[in-house]
Amino acid sequence: MKEIFSLVAFVALIVAMSVFLSHHSQAEEIPIPTYSSWPPGTKAGSRGMVRNISPHKHAFARVGAPHPVRYGEMSERYELRQGDCGGSDCKNPRKRSEIREDGSNIKARLNRDTWIGWSFFNQSMPNTSLHPVIGQWKVNSEQAVIKFFQEDAMNGYSKCTSKYCNTRKFPPSKNDIFVQLDDLRVARNLGAESNWGNICHLFNLASSRGKWVDVVIRTNFGTDENGYLQIWVNGTPRCDYRGQIVASRSKFAGPSHRRGIYWSYTVDWDNATPSKAKPTMVAYYDEYRVGTSREQVDIRIIEATGGPAVD
Image (cartoon, rainbow, N blue to C red):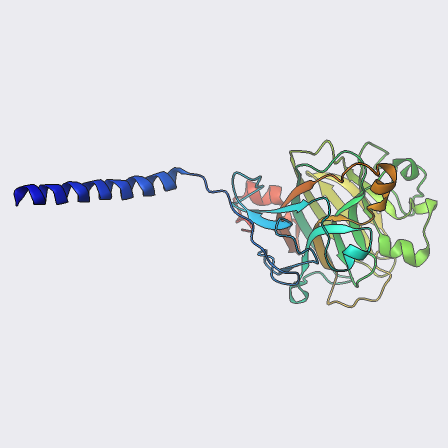
């Protein structure tokens, strides 16, 4: 009988040790977040945002370490691959991995002072100019009132008039991420005098690869000549525009924000390199905030004062 009890006790000890080691091993591992599938129009896992068209599982995910995270524990990962499309994009030369503000979450308003801040990380967006849009604000389904995108527009920038471009304060450089007032460009049929609405150059996409870029915006989304747009990149002023920004009638409560990777005219790639597959683009975003002061949205100030993360 003693032998039986000894055997049972030994087996129980082995099982207990196995369970302990299993739990201990799992605790030591760094979990890699998995991507979740969610249909267009559903909540994107980022507060107040919904998925914009793309049906692909890999398009968007909220992730943590070992992925890049600017502050706190989580960031947003966007991926755009060869052949990706969804909805109306599939019948047009465009594709995207993008989320947009839910109508009930729009905080910005026309003609009202607004501060916006976020951080951008380019992991694998190529150096060649594909004109990807990495952030935009719309008041309807047409042109963006403010758009951040890559563009070979520096030659045109040097000829831009002072009404639109502050070339004395911000002389031509190698920066290829521009701010375009696309809604105003279409409404006024703007051309070379405004560099086709590409009024400010912010940073270089290739040089920023593998680094976090901190962006702060101050604007009132002005509908008349009292409008203004100021932008800081990594704490340095990069844009100071004064004049109208919004020309179209708004269908929303205010400008609706979209972010991610939006490739709006893929035919350029097809014409230039018809036999070459389109590159996979991956980027991260973190700490998107809207407020009434710089202190509420500037991640560098928030980080220095130990403020909470957006997580």
